[in-house]
Image (cartoon, rainbow, N blue to C red; front, side, top):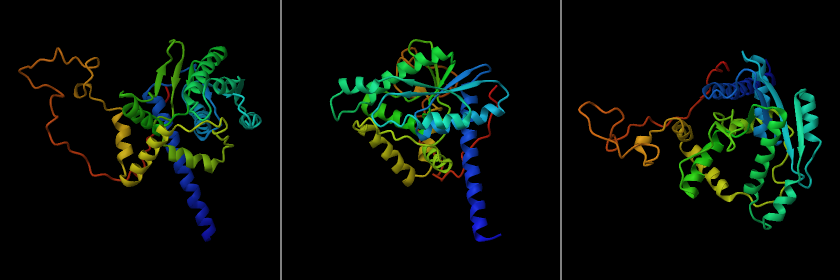
Amino acid sequence: MSKIDELLAKQKYSFNKLQKRLRRGVGKAIADFNMIEDGDKVMVCLSGGKDSYTLLDILLFLKKLAPIHFDIVAVNLDQKQPGFPEHILPEYLNTLGVEYKIVEEDTYSIVKDKIPEGKTTCSLCSRLRRGILYRTATELGATKIALGHHRDDMLETLFLNMFHGGKLKSMPPKLVSDDGKQMVIRPLAYCTEKDIEQYSQLVEFPIIPCNLCGSQENLQRKAIKLMLQDWDKRFPGRIESMARSLQNVAPSHLADANLFDFKSLKTQDTPFEGGDTAFDQPEFPQSQTTKDNSVQIINLG
């Protein structure tokens, strides 16, 4: 085998490993949180960015293997931003043969009218977009709305709420909308942004830039992202540990009286499970770089 053939073989092996890791992560998230059930119609919100492209790609693959039947419809919201390349998504979706709908709503003009020039428009834009997508899901008869938020988005949101909102909350993998009518799922909850970025580049998705609105970037989120990226480089394994903590919560060792009944807490003659370990020296494993945190795909049923 020539050196070129060896290089190509290594690249193919690396790509296959990356693809399997992402597919297994999505499969496990779907199973862990019962995101997709038999007979579901999943509306995949497609923005034209790397995350939503990857989400649609993996769900279409899993649909072929799943022991249950579910349908997929891709939906893009054309917000009439100047310079938005309207042809890219329809052309791409036609090549996939997937059902899709392009919703045209001029939220751009509304946001520009309400938000002063140079200020962050993301909050208002997000609320408008969410309302339109919920309405569209109802019109299409979709039972689940799939968003492309990944593990790093969830951690960034956790720290944003802690630092600036005084709340200990993040993006849940699955939630019900405020009106109780829509079920929102995040199948990329176990997937890392760097894996998604690499996969997107290798597959060569037709990415649409996200800066068309011209608004100021969310500087608070950017600062959190840079902080986490720095930790990931300097302290291998830290991000993975923080991600696990989202699924390993001890309400009795926090301070939310609405979440844990501290007022009724009493002593007892028998050992108290999960008692006071606050003064014990915690034992943590040595930080190690995780080679492959992938898990096997779990049946969707």
